[in-house]
Amino acid sequence: DQQVKQNSPSLSVQEGRISILNCDYTNSMFDYFLWYKKYPAEGPTFLISISSIKDKNEDGRFTVFLNKSAKHLSLHIVPSQPGDSAVYFCAARPKTSYDKVIFGPGTSLSVIP
Amino acid sequence: DAGVTQSPTHLIKTRGQQVTLRCSPKSGHDTVSWYQQALGQGPQFIFQYYEEEERQRGNFPDRFSGHQFPNYSSELNVNALLLGDSALYLCASSLGHLGGNQPQHFGDGTRLSIL
Figure (spheres, rainbow over the protein chains, first blue to last red):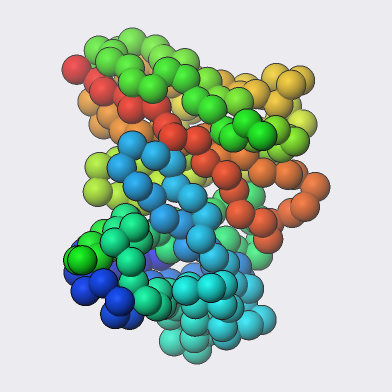
């Protein structure tokens, strides 16, 4: 049973436009959420995070929104750049087990010049 | 500032063999987590080592074991390899005393292929 879901395996966006990547989760014990970006042949790199006590966190072009009632979060990238083309993983950490991070299957973003 | 380093980069084994993968954490980090990433999937948590002990474990069989050394480096051992063990194995490091609300730093992984 997948606790973190990313239902869009891939997404294509024109350069300069907004990219919106979605993530849904099922475990109400999750209280900390992260987004990682992964280029081919490299390990995931941390992008942005949000605690469950917040509903928005912003860092430059990247904003994460959390809707706890819907168990949904989204990552907005504005404006999108070709260098943003990568696989994006949504991840969550349960409050009862801070050592264990649960990853979604990822969404492959292509930003078209 | 050295990041997380993993060795080897690639490895080919046959069914039934045993394998050892190695990880050196980012400078200053004392906690190491191991993940398995199968093709088309997200990383799956195997276990975490802190103070040379396994602190948390995911849903992996006992064929998967690990070790952490006094210098915080770590090894992942897999016995009796199966075809399904073919995957990218990722190591991530962090600071154990900071608790859960911190991002982990990942290495580039070891690509393990089982024939």
